[in-house]
Amino acid sequence: MKKLKRSARLVEMTQYLLNRPHTLISLTAFADRYQSAKSSISEDLAIIKEVFEEEGIGQLQTLAGAAGGVKFIPRMAAEASLDIVRRVCRELEQPERVLPGGYLYMTDMLGQPNLLNDVGRIFATAFADRPIDVIMTVETKGIPLAYATASCLNLPVVIVRRDNKVTEGSAVSINYVSGSNKRIQTMSLARRALKEQSRVLIIDDFMKAGGTVQGMMDLLHEFNATVAGVGVFVESGEVGTEDRLLEDYVSLAKLTAVDLKTKQTTIVPGNYFDTE
Amino acid sequence: MKKLKRSARLVEMTQYLLNRPHTLISLTAFADRYQSAKSSISEDLAIIKEVFEEEGIGQLQTLAGAAGGVKFIPRMAAEASLDIVRRVCRELEQPERVLPGGYLYMTDMLGQPNLLNDVGRIFATAFADRPIDVIMTVETKGIPLAYATASCLNLPVVIVRRDNKVTEGSAVSINYVSGSNKRIQTMSLARRALKEQSRVLIIDDFMKAGGTVQGMMDLLHEFNATVAGVGVFVESGEVGTEDRLLEDYVSLAKLTAVDLKTKQTTIVPGNYFDTE
Image 1 (cartoon, rainbow over the protein chains, first blue to last red):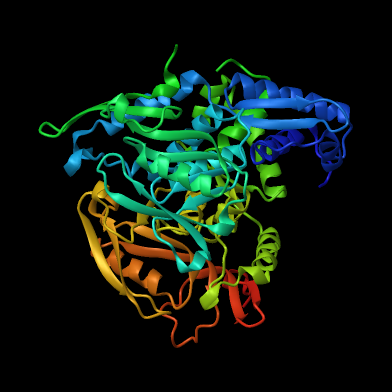
Image 2 (cartoon, each protein chain N blue to C red):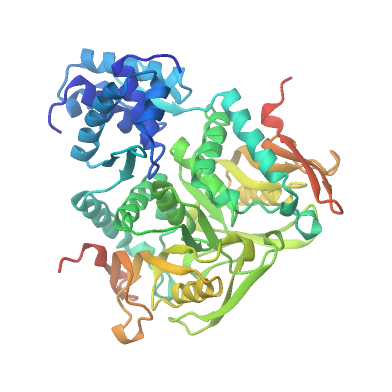
């Protein structure tokens, strides 16, 4: 790269950091990249850090020492997150979203890259400080949420299949009971998709009693992997606490009531926004 | 937003533009956001434009006039794209990726956010100048590619299902013949997922004869929608030209030979890199 003026270097460093979240970049690497003294680079980073933190873009963590450097941690401030989720709740409350059986149509929302990027950043904020190796979801609607989160956390994604496809090689299958309708279903994951001992963050779009998430946890057990966290976009609050299969999860929104006759629903911010 | 110094403003504007690809932002909006004169904003944009273009990040299109403003178009230069695809080809040629039936295991690669972001930018470059309303893919492995592309093009995604889920409402189903193994399969799309007359970019992970893509085209016909383009990550070159169901598509890589005995495969850059 040719030597840049400070103003151009700030632009370049900003895009470089934004494209490499949760990645440690040494001062030396920056100094080499921009053919500049480390002292200049440090000054640049101080400017970027201040803007990122003031504007709620994220943190710029500085690690001192020989192995030191800088790491961009995308974050979404609580207030901005709540604004976004409140907008999601209002949008989800539209009567035409109520489908037969009390399901909620939200596929279109999970198809909007802007919203997904925001939601990914909220999940990435919620789980930023946990040690995680990989993000897992089950097809189909959780996939975009898992990738949006993975993109902010710089982690790979594995997708659990509801069938066992020939293009995946040998796989582990389990049966699980979907908590809400008591049907027995199958999910499977390719043997080579997940290393043993992995610490796994589970992300899904909707959770009723939690049978599907519980199924993924059982599958993880088969891989000697552990659950590092569970994040769901919308949880159904219509499930009694005694029927809920898991307790430790983060939800961004909560469906508290569905009136099938009037098609009125009530959706409120989820437990991520609970203040003790 | 409080008034920023030029250096801080450059950082903020860079992140603002990067997060809003293919979105027209008026000079007035920037001037208001940063409480700065339009002349200062124009100077900042000139610096950002030069860095983005020199470093191959993308274009900053300036539109003059009352409705004018600036638009960030993510691009990946041909040389950088070819480097990435060559690395993908080498990685895909590993013998342990050959599965029974001559399938190629590439699910892990489609789980890496960094690679997906790169591939998304390549597809976004390939289709940047076509009028497109929505990106379509079929579950499951094409989904991350579709989102990565959509994120760069600022477009929504619709996902065609291989079943007809209760949570989607009324849907249109079609049968199609998978060209490679001649089996009849079903795919469906929720009625409300796609507006009539939409111009649709189809993205998928793998194409053999093109039966699945042809199925999506037939489905589009049911919605009075049109095909704006077809992009596939890897195409199989083992299909004779006379068996190929479609001609107008962009492929990033091409599987030219699979030896099931030795598990040797040959994968080369796809037709996107063809030079006439």
